[in-house]
Amino acid sequence: MTHFLDDLDTLTTPRTDWTRATAGEIYRAPFNDLIFAAQSVHRRCHKANEVQTSQLLSIKTGGCAEDCGYCNQSAHFDTGLKASKLMPLDDVLEAAEKAKAGGATRFCMGAAWRDLKTRDEDAICDMISGVKAMGMETCVTLGMLSDGQAEKLREAGLDYYNHNLDTAPEDYGRVISTRTYQDRIDTLDRVRGAGIHVCTGGIVGMGEDEAARIGLLTELASMDPHPESVPINHLVAVPGTPLGDSKPLDGIDFVRTIATARILMPKSMVRLSAGREGMSKELQALCFLAGANSIFVGEELLTTPNPEKHEDFDLFKTLGIEPMQLPAE
Ligand code: SAM
Ligand code: DTB
Ligand code: SF4
Image (cartoon, rainbow, N blue to C red):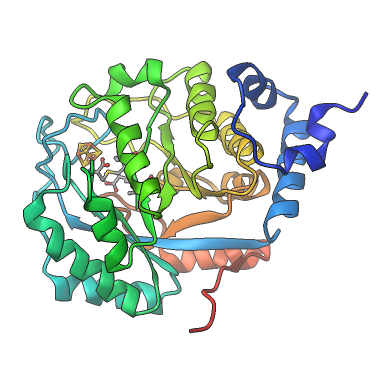
């Protein structure tokens, strides 16, 4: 009988009825079988040698009311980060122009907010429509949304909303206490309901166990439809945060996480997100082989370092990877 990891016709059809048991079987498969299956799925559903590039900008930094244990922007922890107010529109648009000139195709604006306040909606919509007018894809991550807000953002030209599940439901309380897993799912439902592409994923390397990584991936792959974009972040451990002295996840386990995401959500973009600064070229190459096909470019993520752009484009060249281009305007 054919092993299910060899049945590519079935694997490349997205399904939302994954169980943790099957996801665990995939995650724990012999490494070569796992990578071969993930790469086979990948090249049936995506261009084999193409990677999408997004660039982040922190439009409002620090002083956040939430207590996410990984985050240096929470007002609950003393990390020495300087908080700032919402950035003026012109500065945001200038940064987006630079990102576009540097080759990024999507501009993702992040704010250290618990939720989007009515008073900030117009300023955010102006940023979205300004970036959209440059011909870039737009993404924002602003915390929780309430009824009607997602529609407003969509009308301004928003393509993607990022809001992460972060970890498995049973691990969540260890990391965050100020909002629930269900709050996150409610925001994602509002985003989906407004016709905005969903970008949601999580963080590994937070001291979670393997079951929690498999649980997170199963939650993501149970969303119907699957999120269009799935960021897999490795924790950027920041001293002063509760998770600041977490031990990095073993590289092979990290690659297993990426490969399992690729197989569970064959058509989604899987983003090798935060944490690349600490990764070797070889580890990143294995992640691309395992099906990652998106990265953040630019020397800063939101508040922490990311590889220099020229290093990333050199790596692409070494690997024969083409950065994804936007369709001609
Ligand atoms: N405040 C909003 C929120 O939490 O939804 C938007 C910005 S928040 C920084 C976006 C995401 O970045 C978080 O959900 C988390 O998954 C990720 N993140 C934050 N700090 C991180 C860190 N130190 N390492 C890795 N990922 C991190
Ligand atoms: C996501 O999943 N990763 C990005 C983006 N969505 C907003 C954020 C990573 C943040 C890393 C820590 C920092 O630079 O502040
Ligand atoms: Fe605030 Fe977002 Fe950081 Fe949580 S992850 S503390 S919500 S900025």
